[in-house]
Amino acid sequence: MPNSFGKLFKITTWGESHGAAVGVVVDGCPPNLPLTSEEIQFELDRRRPGQSDIVTPRKEEDRVEILSGIFEGRTTGAPISLLVRNADQRPEAYAEMREKFRPSHADFTYQAKYGVRDHRGGGRSSARETIGRVAAGAIAKKILALGATRASRPAAGAVAAEAGGTLAAAGGGVEIRAFVTQIHDLAVPIGAIASFPTLAEVEMTAVRCPDPATAAAMIEKIKAVRAAGDSVGGVIECRTRGLPAGLGEPVFDRLEADLAKAMLSLPATKGFEIGSGFAGTRLKGSEHNDAFEVRDGRVHTATNRSGGVQGGISNGEEIIFRVAFKPTATILQRQKTVDIHGVETELAARGRHDPCVLPRAVPIVEAMTALVLVDHWLRNAAQNQIFKF
Image (cartoon, rainbow, N blue to C red):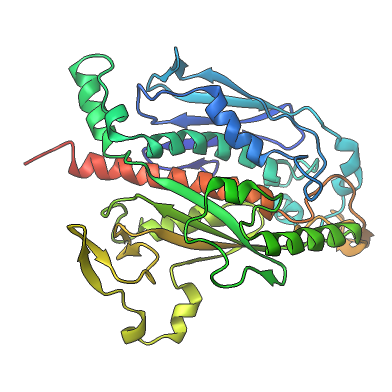
C-alpha cells in the first residue's frame, strides 16, 4: 500500500498537516523490547517545528501518545499505534491555495491523480507526515542500539529467550548519525568534520552542521533567505557504523536500493548517492576498487568508496550516503501559477514554512535509515538464522 513501508518491520503512517492528528502503526516489532514514550519523544523533539529561528514558527509540542502494542514498558509483538495531535492549526492561511497550485509543490499532481486534495498545508504531502516515520524510527533505533547481553536477557521462558537470542544479533551497538554538510552554496570543507561526529556535535547548532564555522555561515544564509521570502536547499550526509556484513538482497531489494527509496520518499528530496557516488565516475577501476585486508581477525576494506555496500549487501564497513534536498517549494514571493480551472494567475503563499528543510530533516533521515536496516536484519534472520540444516 502507498502509505506503508517495510516488509517484516512495517510502518503505516496516517493523518494530514491540519487534520486532528497524525501518527503511525508499527507492525512486526519483536516482543519484549524495553520501550518508553520518552525514548520516542526524544526523537520527535529533534524534528518538531518552532525549535529555532531558522525553521517554521508553527508551535507544536508533538507529544506522542502510545495507544497499543506496549505493556508495562515492553513491546508485546502486537501492532504499536502512536498518535500525535495537531494543536497549532491555521487552515485559513491556505484559503487561496484551495484553487491555486503552488509552483513545484504537490498541489497539482495530487489534484491530477485523485481529483480531490486537502489544500490545508498540503495534507499528506506536508512534511508533518514524517512525524510517524520519526516515531517508528525511534523504535527501530532502539532495536539497533541494543547490546547483545541486554537483548538476549530471558523474559518469558525458553521461547522468549530464543527470540531474544535472534534479536541479540540485531544489537551490537549500531549507531546512525546524519548531519548537514551543505546549505545552498555553503559546503563544509573537506576534513572539517570528524569521520563520525557525536550527537552533541551535530546538535550544538540550530542547523545541525557539526562544523561550527560553516554552521554559523549557514544560519546567516537561511536568515537572509527567509527575510527575502525565499528558500534554500542542501545536502545531508548519513553514516552508520557497527553494522555487520550480510544485510541486503542481491537483486531488487539491494540494501542501497532500499535506502535510496527510503530517502527519496521524503518530502523535498531530489538526489541520493552512496559511497563515492557520482564522483566515482571520474575514477578508474584501479583507483576506485576497495582492496580487502584482514584487521582484528576480520575482513575489512582498505578504503570505503563502496559506502559499505557491495553487490547490494552490507560488507561490514560504515554505510555512507548523501541526500539532496531542494529549496522549500512554498515561498512568500509572488509567483506565476495556474488555478484548478486552468486559468493563469499569480500566488503569494501564506502560512508558516521552513525556509530550509534540512535542519529538521536530519532526524528524519536517521529514522528512515533505521527502518531500512531493522527490516533487512529481520529478513536476514528469517532466512539464515531460524533454520539450520
